[in-house]
Each structure stands twice: as C-alpha cells, then as structure tokens.
Amino acid sequence: MVTLSMGIRHGFGLFNLPITIENGWGRGTFALTIALQNLIWGAFQPLTGALADRFGAFRIMLLGGLLYALGLAGMAVSSDVLNFTIAGGLLIGLAQTATTYSVVYGILGRNVPADKRVWAMGITAAAGSFGQFLMIPAEQGLLSRFGPQDALLLLAIIASFMIPAAFLLREKNFVYTNAADDQTIRQALREATSNPSYRYLTLGYFVCGFQVVFIAVHLAPYLKDMSQTYPAVGSPAIATTALALIGLFNVFGTYCAGIFGQRFPKRYLLSGIYLGRSIAIIAFLWIPLSPITVYVFSAVMGFLWLSTIPLTNGIVAQIFGVKYLSMLSGLIFFAHQLGSFSGAFLGGYLYDLTGSYSVVWNIAIGLGVLACLINLPVKEQALARDTRGELPA
Image (cartoon, rainbow, N blue to C red; front, side, top):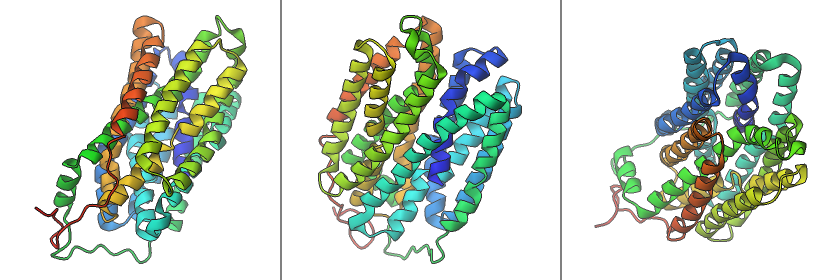
C-alpha cells in the first residue's frame, strides 16, 4: 500500500516540465496543483485518521485506492487548469490520506508490540522509500516512451493495485471500544494540542514537509536551469537518477531510524536529521555541480528524507498511546503538509517571480536549523491519566 502510494507521488516532479510545456502553463500552475494536493492531504488526514480509528482502516483504504486511480486518470485527460487541479490536487490529495503512513501506522500501533513499534514503523517507511526508488525510474520510462498523458493513465492502472492491498491489511478482529472510563476523541485532541512536546513535533514536521516536497518537485527543473553553467547536469537521466537515489538511500535511512529509535532518544535523532539536511543543502549550493555532486547530495538527503516519520510517530504513540494514533498522527501530519504546500508553491511562485530558486533554498536551510532546535526540548515519557482518560490535576 505505502510502496505504491508514496512511490507514485514522488515521481510527480518528473511531469513538471513535460506537462507545463505541452499545455503552455507556467511552472507555478503545476506547482499549485501539487501544493494543493499536499494541503488537501494534510487538512483531511486527521478526519480520515479518526474514521480509521473508529471504524477500522479497511474501508478507508479501499476508497483511497479508488480515488488515487481516478485522480491520475483525471490528470491524464485534463487539458485545462481547473480540471487538472481538481484531479491532481483534490482527488489524489484525498486518496493519500487513506493510503499512506497515518492510517497504516494506526494498524501497526494496534497490532505490533510496543517494544517493536518504532522498528515496524521504520520498516513501513522504508517500504515507501523503496516505492520511490522503484517508481521514479518506471515513471521516467513511461514518460519517455508514451508521453505524459498515457504515462498517467498507466500509472492509474498501477495505482488500482492498492485496492487488493487493502484486503491484505484488513483487521479481522478490529473492535472499537469506548467504555465510560475511556478517553474520548475530544479529550485526546485537547490533551495533545495542549502538550508542548506535541507542538514542537508539529513545528518540526512543517519543516520536514517544506524541504522534501520542494526538492521532490523542483530538483529536476533546478538541474535543467543550472545546466546553462554546468552542462553535464542537464540531462533528464541525471534528475531521474538523483530522485531514484533519494528513494534508495531513504530505504536505509528510514530503516536505521526505526532501529536507532528503539535504542536512543528520538528527539535527538530528529534534531540531527534536520541539522544534517541544512548542512547538505549548503554544501550542494556551494560546491560546483557535476553528476557526482548531484548523486552524493541525493544519497545524503535520501538517508535523511523520511527518517523523521517513524521517529515522530513513535514519539506520539509513546506519549499518548495508540487508541487515537491515526488521528493524532494525522493532525500533526497536517503541519507537514502545510510545509509541503509552502515548499511546492513557493518554489514555483518565487521562481516565476525572480527567475531563480535561490530564495527558497535559503529558506529551506534556515528552517532546518530551526527544526533542529525546537525538537531538543521534546519530552518522550508517556502521560499519566486518571480513570476517565483525563490528565491528573
């Protein structure tokens, strides 16, 4: 489920130039669609997570697989901006709320022992990373052979395989319990939003979304622009390989995050990841570009790419428990998607405004340093509650 859902979405950056050139659109148009997709994903993720916590994830994932396929098909047949934005932004954004980490992590939280939970989340994040490594070369191959429209239609067929995957993830013994002394949804929301550590994690997740989506959507156009100075990096194969390397090394990074998250304080690992991203971006901008430097940057960023996911969700489960894990993960993920919207949209908007990506690269560096600092005071201890699900006075 996660391999297909995350793998397909990470290849959307490859469609940026082919679609905008063919339709005569500015880069800001395509960027706005992807930005809206991320915003819808984040805005509706808490609701989808709450429904999955209440009724089980099976029906939610079935609907998500269907919407994903319809959204890709809609992008393929749309020749005007509004229809393209509805298909690629609204439908796929809703589909991703039902087929990615928050809902799947809710299943893991309910079915995996606590001492192996972060490890299992790391494995799942690695599966999403493998999807990026697998699907980006596949999407570039489809683009090269069939063009953007037919490539999107074929991806819609591939996305439909998430529907049978939902049956494999069905929790046959799922039962929602809400006895009189259990914590309610309202209590869980109030408890989380008033908790400083939850707010720190939320701000950090905003930075994560900004950085990864800006790079995913705009790295290929950036390399094309820089080929005027460094001709060796202008080939589409360089961008495709770079994005695939991000996916490959992300497999190792997320797996290691799951392993280390069981042994070391997760807040320190998160701070190190955010600081490492900023250092990697600074080096990438200062060192003269070549295929080797692009690949090294991609490998380093890939290792740090989604390593935040098992660590952040692991802390949420550790502090608040697993009953409302999908909802609480979805709520914090909304901040991630606000960052994703900002990174995707500002990348295109500021490029159209200034003719350069320099401003957004610098924003990404500064945000990484900020995220490093705000994760340090996070407290990972489980909260103590009374028999009514409330925090003690």
